[in-house]
Each structure stands twice: as structure tokens, then as C-alpha cells.
Length: 346
Image 1 (cartoon, rainbow, N blue to C red):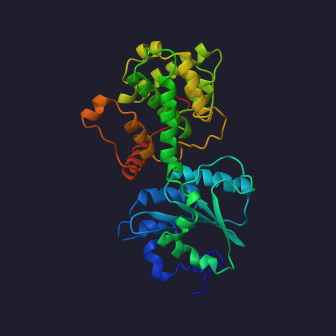
Image 2 (cartoon, rainbow, N blue to C red; image 1 turned 90 degrees about the vertical axis):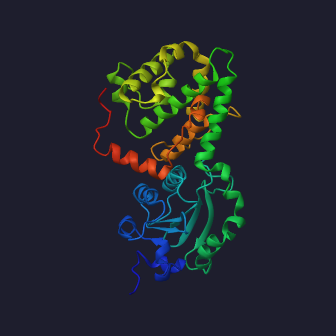
Image 3 (cartoon, rainbow, N blue to C red; image 1 turned 180 degrees about the horizontal axis):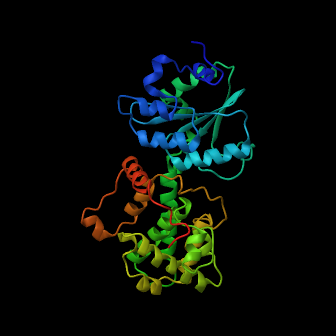
């Protein structure tokens, strides 16, 4: 059968019928497989989120995501890379345009602007579609040669989960250094985890401006806007009113502590530190930067890893554990599928 223009790119990459067990052309292709595909739920989400035209897997995990575009638009590619990085499912995204293929890294943090050479963030290589290099690309990826050749673009510490955890740890260290020593490590850990979960709810559209308005707060679009309220005493009061409402709406250990006692220990200086983080200030340098994170895309496993990093010692001793991403995403999606949003209600 002759390839259509929409699928001709596959043969240019060397994706043939012999490769079919490793290549998924669509979400329907994934769902029709008789044999279970590893990380199927992650791949399903990637097809939906990124509008992919194919996924190449190795024996255990996604390896390359493919997306076909009519033309290269820098602003759209910048946002696509940001979503791809936040999703954290595969190390490589290949964007196929009529004349060239752009290769992006999932281990390069979005920076919000082009670099000194004019390259968009995450761009590793550009390959002409008419060149033999395109046929050599996948063998180089599968052998590891591509990653060795472009090692600076595949820094494990820049992967979304590690970058977020390290930045949160730096924020946690800053909170410990605040002049007021009354807040214990346990209090600060719980405070930070609550903030992350609240940000997650905003980014996933579970709560928003109408939710805040419904509990008597200004109709602000995001957590960072609550943290930025002036005077600072109003920011603190608003934040804890939000926490108390979430404690009613979400029955879980995250909001089970005595919030009044905690509020007495958290100072405006603590609020300033966490606002800086959520405003994308680099915690280590103090310089304003680009906010790369999107909890609407970041896998649930990464959120679970945050709780594990800042887990109370007592919980560690009692054997607390966290669900792997693929199961957690599936359980969450199924559990919330028939639930109305909290937007517009309290």
C-alpha cells in the first residue's frame, strides 16, 4: 500500500510493518492491542494532551513521541515543549513539518525564550526530511548514541520531577531559615505540601476564581494571586480561609492538622518565600525566571513524590507508601470522571 502524505514520514524514519509492535499510531491503536502495552495510561494521556501522531516504545517505556505539524511556529512549539516536558513520559519529541524534523528533549527545562543562538528551549537537533540522517535517527536513539552525542540536552536533573523536587527542597530550606524559629520542620513540611496540592487543584481546574468568590475571597485566578495579596496580613488570612474550605471539601490527611495552630506559627516572611517560588523566582539566585510547571499536566506520581520527600518521620516509620504514576493517574481519572468541578460551588 502506498503511504499517504499524512503517513509518509513514517517510512522516512524507517518505521515499517516490522516495527509495528514498537510503534503506536494512535490512541485507538493503543486500545486495540491484544497484548498489554507498558505505561498504556501514560501513552493514552500523551495522545490526548499533545495531539500525537505516533509513539515509538522500547521494551519497557515510551522512547519517542511524534507530532506532525503544517509549519514550524516558534510560539506554538515553545508551548508544546513546555507541555511535553511537564508530561514527563518520553525523553524525545520529534516534530515533523513538511521540510524538516525538529527534535526536542524532555530533559531540558522550558525557559520562556530562545537562547543566545536563537534556538527555542529544548531544541536538540534539526534534520532535513530529504536527508539520510532521518533514517539514521531512530537507530541512534535506540543504541543510545543520540543521547551520548547530545548529552548536554539530556540532563537527568532537569527532568520535570527532579527539577520540581529540587526547587521545592530549596524553598523548604529557605523556609527553615526564616527568622521565626517557632514553626517546626513538621509544620513547614505540611504547609509546603498543602500549597502544592492547592496549586494542583487550580491548574487542573478543580477550583478557581468562582470557588474563591464563593467563600468570601477576591475572585482571583490562581494560588499565586492569593499569595500576592496586599497587605500581607490579608494574604495570610485568605490563604488559611482557603485551606479551611479545602479541608471540608477534601477528606484527607493533608488538611487534617489544626490549621489555626499552624496559622499562628506561619509568618508573613514564610509567605514571602513561598510566593517567590510560585512567582517563578529562582530560589537559589533570587532572580525572576520563567514558571515552567503546569500541574494540569504534571503526572500524579510527581505530586506523590513531593509528599514522599517531605513525609513526616512518623509516617515513614508506619510504612506509608505512594502509588506509582500509571496507577495513580488511572485511579484519579476514573474517580473524577463523573464528578462535577468545584468551580462555582463550595
